Image 1 (spheres, rainbow, N blue to C red):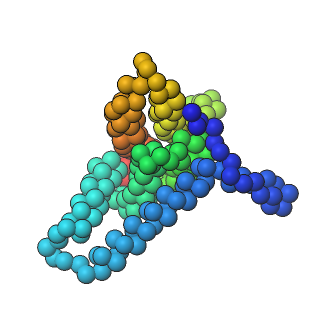
Image 2: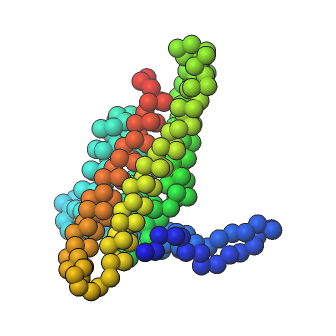
Length: 231
């Protein structure tokens, strides 16, 4: 069972160790694949058709659904967040599904999900300050000033809960699949290797991966919208 993160190489940069881990390498591979897909899509769509068909139809459908997802959660006024959340959604989804190809999902590493969680944390407070100005800081002492410590703890808990929810679900699936593949291939347990791993991949990689992607993105949008408030 390959649960521990494999370290390929350790570099020393200005006296500090920098680890080249399996998560980093897998993330680079997935990012390269996503970028390659984006370049191919851009090249193919240089000849735009008024009546889309084939590849253009698929791309337009994906973008339209993502736009509806964002506007349905945050409102038409904030549809520009679709550009950011489309990238986050696509990266998290591809990462979660990478287990189907034998990769250790980058989202099964807390470092990856924490980075995504703190990116959302930054957006939450940046938009809160940008939209509410001084009223934003006043909200920390509401309804009474004594609530300040609790409100701060609540805000700090947001990126932690986001990152641990995604990390825990994906890592849990990886551990279970590792246990399944570690079953010895001999009687009377060999039948567990026939078809069962495929069914479990459908649940833990496809179903759970897609659900956790939607939950992560939807919660991120909800937290940001809550800080923006109604104008």
